[in-house]
Length: 268
Image (cartoon, rainbow, N blue to C red; front, side, top):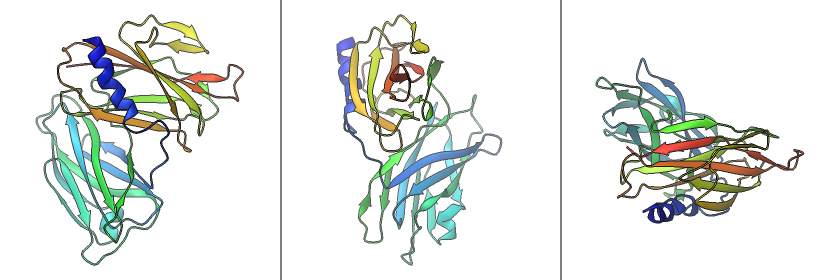
């Protein structure tokens, strides 16, 4: 069974490609107000945007989108609409949102039946230019940690603490991903996946995902980030623990490398 899990998780990392260039659009979750049940969608774009849609998933499931408003989309005259889980924006007058980095829109959701603060994730983003050509888009990490645990143990490199975040509810068929930030631009990296680790001290931090069941090699983008995602495979038993961690090249350090924090995922 573990070999099948490893094969599925390999797809999580491999699907985006070993070398991932920064996309022209980066979509992220901004400020979250859990009292008012709103969260910002922040867009950083290097090209004009004429239309968009993206999905929002909550973990545990239950909350639904109520409305979207404000931000650069409304300021540009975009028509905004939504379903329970999708946001759509476009301009009837062919207006565009100029390159920049600001709040795209604010999403209001219904969390009246929530027993806890939900995890909020973005997925399946489709952005287009004024000729209706698709614009490659990267998606930032989710808000919240369900059902991922940050184990710490990371170290500070030349660009700050290398931070690893796991996202997704780990329910069969839902999107799961890993997102790493603060690596040196273009740095070589190795990712470790472990099912039975023995933590130990190294590189002034703690190695949480060793011995590894699998290791994969990547290169950070020019912004020092990496993201990989996949549809979580069926058949993984509930309560399965999986550990992830990155070792990142950093030639400014005496050790020549730094550690991300470790993250542990437990299937529900």
